[in-house]
Length: 368
Length: 214
Image (tube, rainbow over all chains, first blue to last red; front, side, top):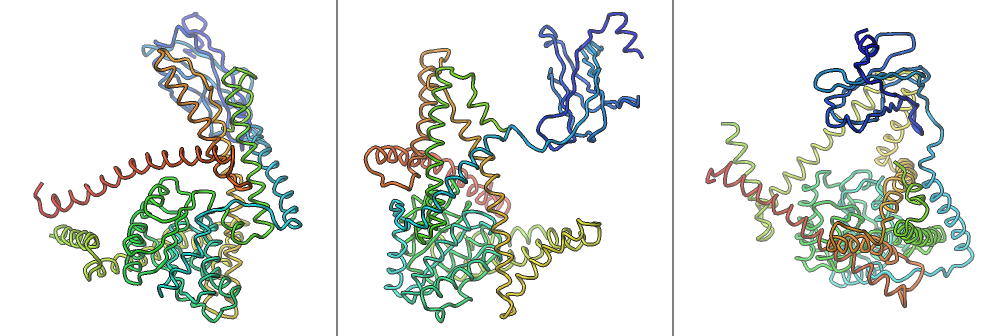
């Protein structure tokens, strides 16, 4: 009441307030905006935002801002209920300006987030390339994939370990089965198991996660069966160690120094234990092949192991080693998408440099 | 008194683990086995207390309607894993693994595209010339943007697998891998600094909490 009285007296500056349903969201949100005169900016002490229903229920203070913002997103609304909003600006402890919405705002959910259109287009184009190359790979068995040194060295490492009469140690890191590097690591493990079975070598796989252990057991079993030596498969060589990061590192270090494997594979997702494992492997003189997508751990692997699969080289391993059409098609499709993205990046940079298109490409890729 | 005993135990295990720097020895073996064993036991308790009991057991008690019946799916998948102990039914555990891997791959496609790929592409749309307040800053800002834009493109080319890295592609990928190595070098130094702070923390524990020298 006092507000209306002061407003009528002309002592309070009216503020234009607008409230709209927050676009492209899952509902339950209304965006409130208001205008502030640039001459007020130094004076504003706080801004209070009120919400009230059309039924005339008493105002409820939903937020107090202590900086001269002109937007507030109310994430506590119920869908399909009309709301009105009021904004009160305080300066020097006194009400300086006030405004209310004249139209009610109703929050609702949208089926499609148009801000993510770029994601949809990229995935659609990727899927088209993928399907095309998978079909092509079925007929053309000689799709080319460049040499990846780390993968070429697998046979050498297994062979060397066998010659030395030592086991092979395969460490899958701290990833869970839902992590993509762990899945990629299983593809490499299969190849290692296959070769180990051919050479009659022992493969030890201490696991960080029980589900990964189960998957690793299945993978090694398959590798031994494919090599025609299921009799050599020993399930107890693939076992659970612990799910504690440094407990796992201590345990694997112990295995390294006591069983002295001839080849150590560090393939998967690693954290701070990466260097501890790689250094211990180096100290026992094992040939080491590492691979991870963890950017912070790659430097340690590059410095302390013989071969390193960097990031996507790990993902390419499956196609490289198995040569099956599905995997080959995936790699080919990814390559084409990479080329398209490289061109888009160059195009975007040139458009920004010469101020062409009013940031159209940048805005298109802005998804948040 | 209790805290003194725990400090001595912690100091003993710290020294036992550090003794590995000399060579494998019975002290390290003891500490390693205690650590691995206790952490494995802790994991079992943790999974029960924070996952299985509140989400599954309490879920069956408290949830109603469809939400309650949905819990049957993870329960069945969990039981399939346990069936590995029964040889004729052990193959059922593959279903659980297939479900988890498939779910992760499906979520990963959209998650990684909108969480990493698209934002990184967008962040690379930088002007190749930036006018700074001074000539020096203009050069630095422009150089920075050129490094980011062309560094990204050359690094992408390094991960191009469909062609032999020869000719122009070979040169580009060489530049790409050089940029990668410079980045890894910087990351190496940065992480080593963080590791040294961890070592300082342990040494401080020994000298301060245990021996009281500092």
